[in-house]
View 1 (tube, helix red, strand yellow):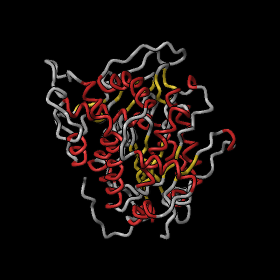
View 2: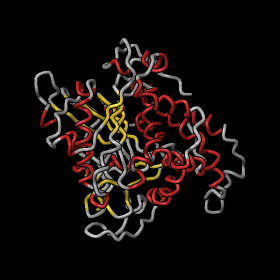
View 3: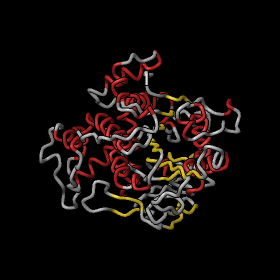
Length: 411
C-alpha cells in the first residue's frame, strides 16, 4: 500500500476530512446505500461477473486498436467512414520504461473524424495554459480517458470546455466568486485508473487545482487490464507497492509472461485470466491513493460516472459496475455524480462519432454537459464550490441524474 501523505492544513471541504473514512465504515448507511454496501463486500473477492467479462471481450479489439493502431472501417452515413486508431492518428508519444507508457504529444495538430484535434504545449486536448495560476482564478482539473478527452470532437465541443464556458458566463466575477474559472482537461484516451493516478501526481498538481474531478466509466476495468498487460509485456517497473502486491498474488509463472520474437506475450489469455480477480481491488486502491494525494494537497475531490454510447452501457449492462464504482467512491468519502443514464433516451446513432465507435460526438458532449451542470446544481457541497445554474432545458427532457454522496457524519 502507498503510505498516505500527512497534512496539517485545514481541508477546504469537510468531505475530504480523513475522519470520514472512519465514518464511512462505522456510521450506519441509509437504506438506499444497501446495494452499494453489498457491492463493497464483493470487492473483497473481486472476480469479474459474466456480464463484465463478455463486455470486456467485445470491447477488447477496439481499444487495443485504439492504443496500438489500425482503425476499422465504418459504414455510418453522414460522418467519418472509419474509426481511427490512437497510434494511427499520430497524436501520442510512447514513453520508454515509464509507468504511463504513453501520453498526448504536445502541440499536435491533426484532423480526426473531420474535426481538428489539437493539443497545447503540455499535451492536453485543450486551450493553451500555463502552470502558474493567476490571482482570482479557480481551477478544476479533470482526470479521465477518451470520453473525457474528446475523441472525435474539437476541444471546444467537449463537456469539459462547455463547463468552463458556463461557469465564466454565469458565475465568474460575482460578489464572493472568482473572477475566472478554468476547467483543465488532463484526460488521455485509454488511460486506466492507475495512469490517471500517475498523471495526477506527475502533472495535475503542478497546475495548482482548486478541485479535481475524477471521471469513471464502465470500461475502466478493461483499461486496467490493457495497462497491466502492457506494463508486464514491456517489463516496466510496477512502481506502486499495491500494484506489485496484486501482481505478485496472481501466481504468475515465467511461461505466463514469456515473449515471442516480436516482443508480444505468448500466453496473454492465461495472463489475463490470472490478473482478472485483482482488477477491482486495484481500482479501489487507485482511488484511495488519488483521494490521499488530493487530501494531502488540501484539494477537494469529486467523481463523476459517465456513459459510453451504445448497448454496452445499457441499464442492465452497467448496473453492477456502476454500483461498484459508487460504492468505492463512498468508501473513500468521494462525492459522486452518477451521469450514467445520460444517453438512455437517445438514439445511439445520433450520438456516436462513427458507426461502431462508442465515443460521444458533439451532441453527446452537449448531453453530458447539461447532465453534469444539473447534477452539480443539485449537490449542496459541489454547488458551493462551482455554482452552476439549472440547465435551460426542461428537467423532463433529460434522464434523471442521481447525486451519490458520502454517508452522513457529525462533521
